[in-house]
Image 1: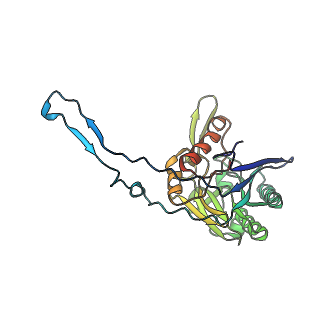
Image 2: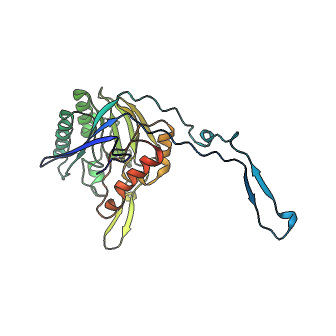
Image 3: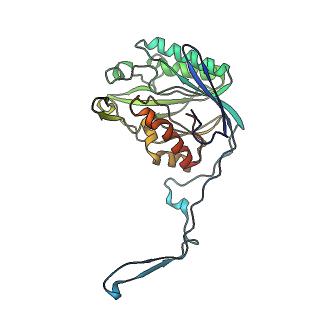
Length: 293
């Protein structure tokens, strides 16, 4: 798959083994310049009317008063200098079974293999510890805030990130909070600490007759908060799968100075081939940021 921004910015190679698929990107901090809105000057609009008195000419010179940053909420921040000039990203594709312990062990080995090949940032896919079904989400859900035995999946991510001194964007797992379930991505830093949680904002409800019907909203609750996190490899905006369809989220991240947008996903085979790469390229190009895919 081509990089989301420009093939000149990424050097990628694919490494295959029977269990894992890794795609590595060598990411250079030659970030594309931010695009500037055009100034609008001396723009005249004549409104048609049968009455001469009702016909008006509207002229405006906006170059001196137009401030695009004031139109953004939250307000834009200057792009911070990236902490690394070049680093490798490991994208782990995992086969998921009904055996949760096996899924956790499988993900751990994949992360370790990616790190052994030089990855400083490792990403897992969406819902990697559980089958992707409404029946499975309540059974496999974990109390992330409680940690320890209540969340063996994130306990593993914390241990591995600290031991290997890498940043992990932990795909997503079902999270239980009281009587609610969320589709949640956890980000762990090189110190093993949980740096951020993103709860999937846009739930995927689809009904294509004869092809696919799935309603995440039957069991999952939508998140409400955009998530941007500073890591040892740069400032990262987080989304999950269907979040990528909504450009406003990516715009917020770009306005807050993100270097990189990451959307762990488990797109289905009906809409995925049509949308996944296209949307990655669109979000990256629209906002002039990197997006590994």
